[in-house]
Image (cartoon, rainbow, N blue to C red; front, top):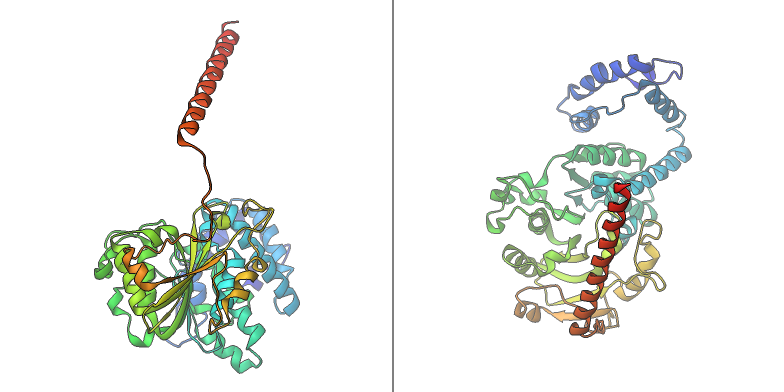
Length: 424
């Protein structure tokens, strides 16, 4: 089953024989690898990756071509492995336009900005409970290697403190591969599981973490019964459950950066109780408001980056409105958000201590008492923005009626032309 025995020879098995081997022998063997009880058993990584995996390629000849291409990469050559890792990151980037696969991808500029502001250090336990393809993990590794990792011991310490879970098979496999390509020797810390499937109360003190960096799925709903694991916040909405879990999992003085939709900010009911709980348990010190186009093309929704630290209640919340660069109407596939577009916010931030922050046309502060008076509605609009003048409603209605009448006239003309053409 080892690569060198079936894949390494470019003139080796191909066509139907290759498909039969992969579907009937290789995949079943990898799914059923026997495991030892010793920690760090790398067979567990392989078994977990292939647990729910299936081969969707129908052509054995094309599969042989893919295998031969991969075989040309020398993974023992650090330069080649780095280039392959960069290509792989681009591949994950391209996935965002490939239908449902995009849900696993957070724009790298967003993950890099969040990691930069949280500033993880080697040895701090860092957890992503919905890790997708591993964007936050790779950014955190890159950040620590650039700023703090100088010795093999520090590198080992950094890797030993990473934690991640992914529910879906495809992104889990992509994440494990991503970790291997980023020099992680044992990516078994990336578990294939549903983080929300455990009762909230069952997470013990020794499982708490220093840092949470995540973009939990939002807009989705969990299957029946999951809400019973969260008796205080009984809901099926995925993002709400993850927020409750994150507050629980942080150590005292632990810090988090989380992507959440506008709906969480202004939502009522369970969302209100959740925001009250968040502000009582944590210092929600900063909310960066992003434009709707950041997650395009697969989602056009207002999103926010929430930064908070556990251990002291919230007194003031700073809001920062990120704007699309001048001369550009929105972010898109061809003009995506870039890390340098966050530079104004980084300059305003005030370092790790967040000192010297000032109100600007893009930044404003709201007292926790005012948030309570608003029923914990965090959807606070920029007080420095001038509301757009959309015109007189009566005039707008008249223009709409006129446009609808013109459209109806054109539709009737088209019907007449079609009827005449069909009658010939």
